[in-house]
Image: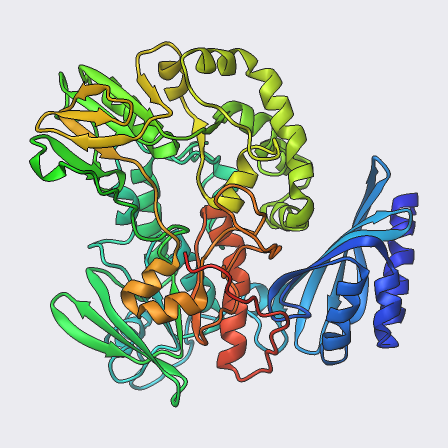
Length: 597
């Protein structure tokens, strides 16, 4: 047995003994003084991080007895690097089976991740337990798979009600729908577009994913091994449409939720859906808003807009650069969408393209971000080292948000050194660069505020050499019939103005579909409470309201990129399944609402 493995075996054995004795203080004593325990449902029926021994003991005082952890078994080889020993073990609780990842420093846990993998007695029917499919023998009146499938489509939402309604049929809604399907939770996904995947098809023509393929798999069905590293939007749209069909999801396309109301007495929702002109009222117990990690588009109110003779629209309405050859184009904003749209307009021969940068932006070249960051867990090299998607997701989740910036800084520093010439040329062109409030780079900006960055796939070169013009540190004052006037008094002719000004918080959808009172009760979605730019305190330690219980019973939020949609849909699905089966789900540390938007 290797020395790292022996250390993990010793620690896990001590943990098991403390668990068996129901000794919260003894468990907490196995952690470093400032240790972290991130739990994904197994102890807390929540997604929460206990920071420091007192917080860990307090959580266990409340939850250890009911959870009744047992059968701790070390799995896989342990490793050691820079004085940190890393290991894995499996365990069971009274209700579930889980897996854990631990980092040890001097024999004590620095970080511990506990992840619920399945509910005991309510496992997915997979592997050796899969459905047989065929009905051998002779049976009068037998029905075929197709007949049963059609009957389900015809009855669900009519003669029988879904347990869960998901609003939104993008990657988030479909990933969650697939997991619920496997768990036997009757679910309807409401998608306003005519086809699943249209939320991608309808974006601007040049859009490709900025994350690599290994990071982006959907649950159960990974992309083929010849899938491009960076997926074009229409290819993703087709994959999602296929996914919905193959996974047998009940997606109501061409449908829109027009209102929802929670019945406190009944403990269920009244959800009104316009389905191809027919008004249908559903009565689910659980309502999930899977409308993306963002909310309703931030459409800025520009004085003079009613007099502007050109085209003025939000980036969510922009379809591409065709039709703007020889035109003067102004794009307000300097993050991902703004850069992509500017580059597309330039490629289509616009007479001039100007980016209006109102505040500083972090830029990470895509190839460098992959080389120094993402590829460590998500790449062919990672797969060859035995880091599967499942394992990568758990390693990724094992880093507590409170110290994640320290894990991100080396990546950011390596990119700054590697791309120093590009950064220097951008600044010389007048581009306002930043590397995050604490120099931790792109990913921390993403989880803290969901904005303020650009993953460079080519547009930065156009900015650096002046082919995309730049107006920095100014705001739009007003529009005339054919120009944009800025706060410094300067003016630019314009035939097209694109407002690439982002989106509001996801609770904006709650306000629109339910009411403002519910949205305010739930509060802001996303962000950690880091007290950095656009992420006000107090510290919460987890993403606000995402994939976990909220202050509104029966209301959940599913969002994020494809990686988050894949991984965290597992935990949201398990929470919904447990509630449907009537299992006890006492939520520890339900997060309060500190901010409305």
